[in-house]
Every structure is written in C-alpha cells, then in structure tokens.
Length: 441
Image 1 (cartoon, rainbow, N blue to C red):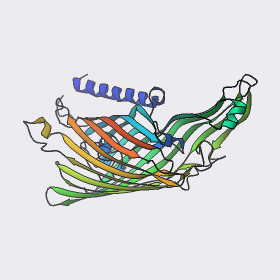
Image 2: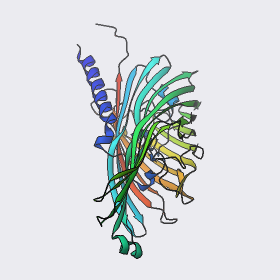
Image 3: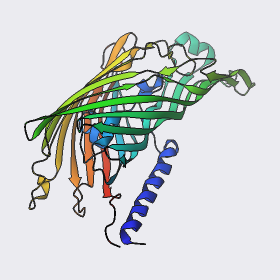
Image 4: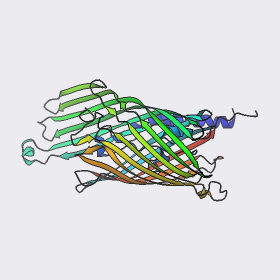
C-alpha cells in the first residue's frame, strides 16, 4: 500500500473516531449553560462551523473553495472537483449572568461540527455531517422567604436542572448549471434527549418533598433547499446572491412526565405518563427562510450579509408537556441579521507567511424565538477570526481556524437575565486530492 493511500485511510479513521466521540458528546461535555434554555427545545446553536462563526454566522451567499460552508447546501459545489474536504471544529462557551444584583458564571465545552464533502460527477458534489441543533443546560435554586409559610413548615428549597442536546445529522447534494447557478438540497435528521427536573424539599422531615420532571427522546426529519447565483463583475470581482428554505419538522418520539412524593414519612408516585409525540401532542421545529448577498475580489477579500426569519408561533411549544416550563415564556417569530468580512493580503506571496492568513470580522443581531413576560429577548455580538494555513500543506489549503465571539443576550429590564459572553471556536479544515486518475503505476 502506498504512503499516500495509507494517509487517506488514516484520515478517514480519524474522522470516524471524531464522529463516534460526537455521538456520545452529551456524556462528556455540556453544550450550553443558560437559563433561557429552559423553554422549548433549548438554546439554538449558532449557524455553521468555525469559518461561519468567525463571519458573524453569515454564509448563505458565500462560495469559498477553501472551506466547507454548512449554511447553504448549494455551496457544496464551490470546491475543487477532485478533492476530498473535511471540517471539524470545537466550541467553548463562557458566560457571565446578572439579574437584580446577583451574578454567576459558566463555562462549557463541546464539539461543534464534523462534516465531509466529496465530488459526485462533474459540477455536482455531496456533503455529510453532524452538528448540534439546540442545547439545554440550566440549574438554579432558591429558598422560600414567606415568614408565615416558613413558620409552619420550616425552610423550603426549590431547585431546577436541565440537560440535553438535540443533534442534526445531514446529507446534502448540489449541482452547478452554466458555471453560475448552483442548486442544493439537504436532508436533516434530528435526534437527542432532553431532561428537566424540578424539586421542592423541606428541612422538616415530617413533610414530604415533591420531585417532578420530564424526559424527552426526540427525533424528526425534514429538508432544506438552497440556491446561489454568482455574477462576475469585471475580471476580478463577482457578486453572489443566495437563499435557503428549511421545511418545518414534526417532532416524534416520547415525552415521559412524572411526579413523586418522597420523605421519611412515605414515598409515592403521584403521576406518571408517557406521551407519544406526533400523536398525544404535536410539536414542530419551525421553518426558516434565509437570504444573503456577498461581494468579493476573488482570492483576496469578501463581504457578505445575511437575513433570516423563522416563525415559531405555530410550533405548538406553548402548553406542550416538557417544552413549556413556565407561562412567562411564549413562542414568537425569530429574526437575525448577520454580516462578515474576510481578507487575505496575498495568497501568492512566497516570502511572508502572514500574507497567506485569512483575517475575518463579523457582527450579528438577532431576536430569539421566545418572549419572556411578553418582552423580546435579543442578542448582539461581534466576531473575530483567522485561518492559519498549515505550513506542511503542499496545496496551502489545509488550515487551522480560530474564532472569538463577544456578545450579550437579554438586559437588566423586564425581569430578564443579562448574559455577557466570550465564546471561542477552533476548526480544522482538511483538503486532499483523492479522485485524480493515476497516469503511472
């Protein structure tokens, strides 16, 4: 076996091992920690891989032959027709919370995505991968302060915790017509487990505590369609418009609900029920429409802008067991504005390494898919990023992407919790010519 073929098989084995680790990610790392994930399907993941995140999450109209773009299936055809491409990224989430003078902090770490792309035939290509769709992670407690109640029963403590992740596995295919129009379709399969537990405990052993919660095992599938059209402007520049539409996803699986009474006096099951999602209750992930535009000088710089909208008011989350923790939350229409800029000083420079580095800056402003006490919850952030080419790469297209996201969600008004965060992402971009026909043995 030749050394080149051996390297390919080693790379494939590495990616398979990463995929196995990803599938068990819920047991080794938390995806998020935020009180806002108590509602619905949790905290929706920022779109894309490390490349997209360092561009403010934008990518609907981006066609970049050096990176996989996970936000639009039509972008899969922006590649070398003989190459195998892969992307693997990690994500570190750091938050500081504040509400009414109370402060707390969290730090979580997880795998963000694993994706691979390869050509099909001529101007068509395919991509497969897996990434988180949403994360649930919260934990809080408080003591009752009503003196009359405490005087009768003693100290009472209420606590709540939630964990879980919904993953999205996907397979996308695209084709380019007339070297300008690219169309793509993507099948998404959602799966995961989400657990929420609420308990009330008494210091006085003569009173029984109450433990109640839900455990959901969720699945669902839907399709996403994408389009990109690239129009040359002069000899060096081009403008690209893009759009995607994701169909709504009917969630299936089970939602186990329970309530127990426990204490030294006696223990009893007060309630237990297993709902079949799609039959006993109907909940769906909302559809999403996204549009974008980008303008670039090929090989040097690019500017892009995205807008997306998703209506969750008909999702069935409000009132659904296991999805609505409190009446203070309700579904609404989410929107997001994202922009990014990338520049590579000189890809052809043979003397200075940092002229080959891709430098990025981005920004975003989004409205979340829920209301808190009727108030909109908004997030605003700025992103920075670079991709460092690996010096041992003969094609200069393997790279290490580093990104940082500075942002804030919520505010100190309307009983909200303000989150300020600094999130880091690191991505590995792999590129290799696998499909060239050998001319000599």
